[in-house]
Image 1 (cartoon, helix red, strand yellow):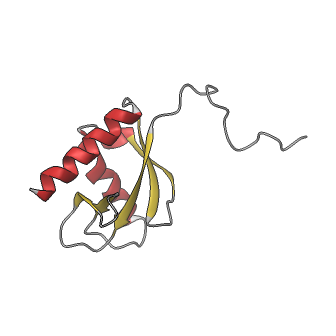
Image 2: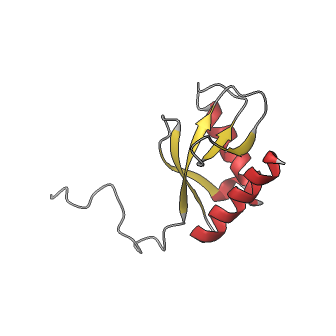
Length: 110
């Protein structure tokens, strides 16, 4: 049996892939929030420590709240064991996903 193509689904095999955006997670922050990093990228600050998947669960909850979608619609696509992550949200296009997260970061900056 050939292993070619195993493990990853082809685009369109299970429907369209949701749009995604890159973020940096800052665990053990004083408050959970979305903000702009020094490099202009999106940073998700979470109060939880990066142990036992707690920071990932809180990151999904913070992103879902910022986007106005249920937690079940948000997924960590890449970087589950890294501070750099790729986040996807079903039901939102790439532009809408980016705009909502930037708006949440700007609200924090004011």
